[in-house]
Length: 273
Figure 1 (cartoon, rainbow, N blue to C red):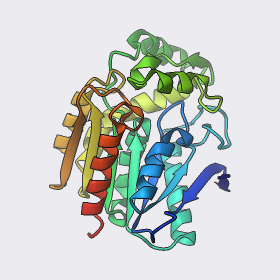
Figure 2 (figure 1 turned 120 degrees about the vertical axis):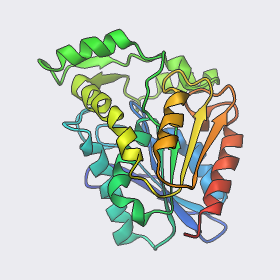
Figure 3 (figure 1 turned 135 degrees about the vertical axis):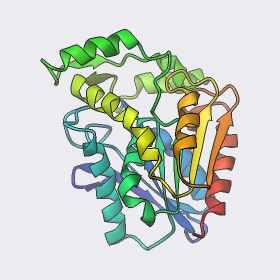
Figure 4 (figure 1 turned 135 degrees about the horizontal axis):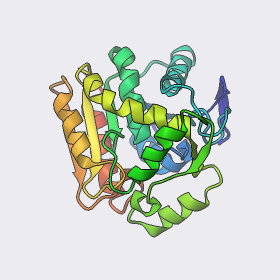
């Protein structure tokens, strides 16, 4: 299926083939990747009767813009808002959910400060908040100094890529994927890292239903961070699904089918407001 463009963003909108759509999920991908790495999530949702809208963030995948560059973190939030407004203009009204993975989780939380009344629920897959041991703290510290002088400078991704999944084929495909970008601009890194501590306060503004999903052995984003954010969220309807032994990508790990069952059951429960 070919992408179409909303402003400079590459977007895909898919509908269930056998049944009418009962809800719509907007999917926000993580750093250095693109929405095409979430096709198995899309297929699980379609099979259960959900429409899916996924898109590549600016500077990622097939979208326009300088690779892995933002001037400020809210650029990413604006991307989600652009896709949301397109849905409101062009798509049939359906119960609406937002799913953000890793960096996409941080973006989704920030977006929901302003738009949560329009959504039935929020799903946060290993949301970026507390960075784990797979991310080199020395590279982060050096980048914080260099960004003041050369914000457009690109550095190699400083995380252990084998930590994304226990499936070595997933890791291999990620490393060889031409649409993934394994270098990041210093300003992108600074803006993301500056935003993460703000998520705790943002969580305290969220009153809609929220589902967290996190692998217990995630070395890229700490599970403890999801516990911390969960406790801050004001909604009484909040849940944390922990994948025993799971790594950073629940949708691409060995137990992904168990995650998809949990995801679709939670969505079905929250179809009515």
